[in-house]
Image (tube, rainbow, N blue to C red; front, side, top):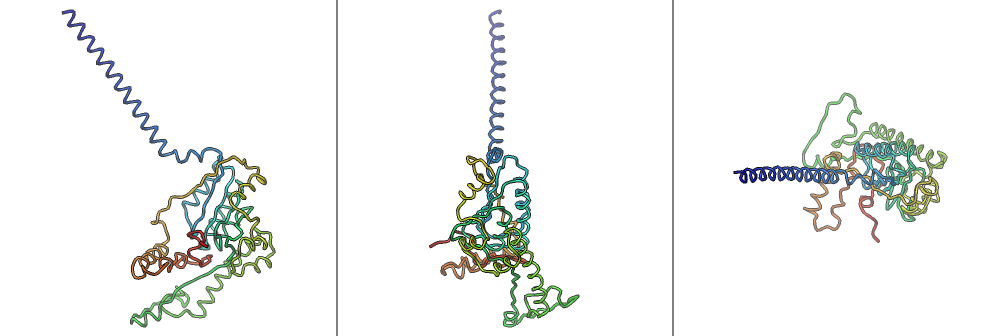
Length: 330
């Protein structure tokens, strides 16, 4: 009997040990999984928590973006960011979008060394946001300039007349909701729009004069809407140097004492087409429909309708749709 009792005791002890090790193994596995999950969720941000130079890329059409503003504020408050490169490849966009981004970058430049690098194109609102930097670099053949403001609208009155559709409206005053798309624009409405454009244009010119140390006369002379090569922009004082991102990094090191060995980390906002302005979504859909349907065999049909063409309100954009989307081809 004593042998049976000892055997039972040994079995119980063995079970206890097995239970202990099983629980221990489960705990280790859970800790490992939690660690792996934490790494997968936060691993991409590890490099942003160590000393680095932040790269902010602006590609394509410029619009207002709350998530972008939030990210710029995070860069401003991140002690690990020792300098910022604003990398631009954009033909422009909405004037208020450019103004909003300029103000955010200007505030950032008060806290961090800030340099702008214009790549293939940085025109109109694209050039506007570059003005926030204390130093602007561009390639010799970069397209920049196009300093000015545009209010564009369509009119389908003749089309409606052709298809037999008549539109009418009751207004509180003659200039309410002018211009519309179904009747000729009155001289009074055009005068109001011209005042609006002129006011915004004067603001843009004063910004160029202030940031580039030009007289208002010099700035206005350069701001006739023309585009400049990087070389011409340098000769006219619109940029500071001809070069690449490395040139911008050298400036941060030489002029702002930013460590040369620091890695350059790209900060970006995840894009969601649901957050795009309605006019851009519509123009994208229409452009895709044309390209994939009736004009599928026509080379470049997808470029017939540009998002830049249907931006809402005042725009500061150079109308060369493909320039901001891809590098120039020989």
